[in-house]
Image 1 (tube, rainbow, N blue to C red):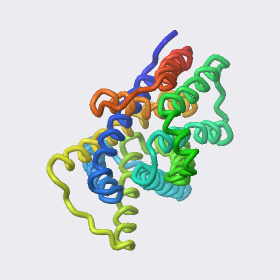
Image 2: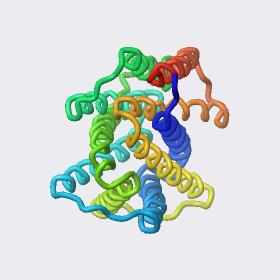
Image 3: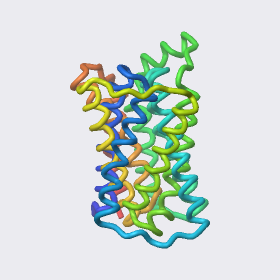
Image 4: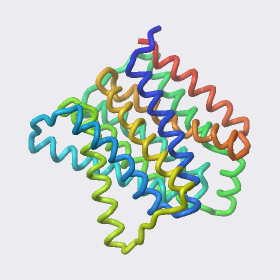
Amino acid sequence: MTLDLGILLAVTAMLGWGIADFLAKIAIDKIGYKTSLVLNQTVALVPAAIFALLFFKMSAISVGLVGIIVLAGISGVFGYIFLYRGFQKGNVSIVSPITASWSVVTILLAFFLFGETLMPVQIVGIIAVLIGVFFASTNFAEFQKSIKKGSSAGVLDAIIAMFSWGVSYALLRPIVTAVGPIIALLFLKVIATATLFSWTGITKTKISIPSKLIFLFIGTAGVLDFLAYTAFNFSLNTQLVSIVSPIAATAPAVTIVLAYYFLKEKIVNNQKLGIIAILVGLILISIV
């Protein structure tokens, strides 16, 4: 068994996005999802622009690639919008596992678009990770209460986020291959920021700077988002989309663990089993 660089980078992306979502949730509860999202993506754009300008050169791109970049960027920011809105409207234990299923969409698209194939043991590992994500990010007691109450708040947002991210991450491979991980990230963050400012302008949403502590939370989440996205993009240089996607999608498990230690939220037995399933799945995926 060898643990290659691509898998390590995907794990890094998972940790970065998991911590970022934890910090973003705290900010969303205080200042709302629109302000939180605009600040998050604006902060993430800054290091992407600096690194791109200082250390990387722009490659020639075709008209077709421009279309792919725009589609990936817009679908990606839609994923953020509906995830953050889902967090504000609904229960995280319902929204998170649905959204985390973006990797299923990405894997299917990678198969049909790029013809990616996997070893049988890796397929078993991916299935274990996907099941683990659902169990680790779902508090079934709370889920049952919501079902009994007929609550579906945030579910539609989560489903839209799932499909939006599934498309966006699947389209990253040709972009990264053509222009490199950092320039690819710069394009996506420019599109995301421009879309968000246009959206808040059209909806006449007032964006104000929050308190220093909340800005620290959302700003740190933005930096972590940049680092996670960078790690994920670099992982595409060495591994299949079908392998790195389910690994990165385990971010909700990280968020749950952080909530347990810092917010004193309870981790139920099915969540513990989910985390174990994720670890087993990661080991199986790493067998190459």
